Length: 277
Ligand code: R5P
Image (tube, rainbow, N blue to C red; front, side, top):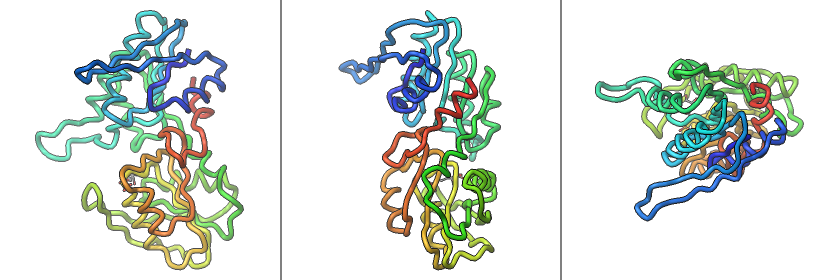
């Protein structure tokens, strides 16, 4: 039985088709004081809770879903298509928590195993106290691309170049390169141009996540005379005015997967997740 979190209903439905397992019609409710409640109908030997923790609400509801199914299912699997707080994987200043560890520990208490998609650092899996596996959905990002002229697949930093290579390989041909990035603050980054020529070429920017859009919009500004610019990412969080920022910077199109359900979520990570289940 696939049990969808409120923010992961598309990907849960796709997973239900992939695995030919029933989809639970979860009810999401709220008390007058603001506290939330979920109700999970039905029962099955295995419950696969699918919930991107895109908000604090999604975190709380995930814990509730796990607790509700654990009383009836023999095995509980938790799929985090997008794991929130994963980028807080260290205490940046004294007195701060390792937030990724804190949420991983809480999630571990309600499940037998965890599957997550392209976390920012795969080491985040080590924070769970149950077996955790990561899945790579980046290859699907090549699917919506049109035919490209002399393509260059660029990542905004060295850490994401493997994703750019994956998308290039799935597309079939093209050069890869990466920028040098320095994060100044939450919403500001400095980026040094890559060595690759960009004039007259189709450029495909690839990253794990677009959050505020600062990284990608600054990266686009470094390109010199590209023919077209495609912004692709696994997790299209697109907080605040990120989509507008990308449009104003000159992105011709933006594509992401359904790990975060947005208008740009053109491809599904469900087949990659299903293969791990
Ligand atoms: C960090 O290194 C990640 O790979 C992304 O580049 C980053 O999280 C994107 O954030 P934003 O869209 O806020 O610049």
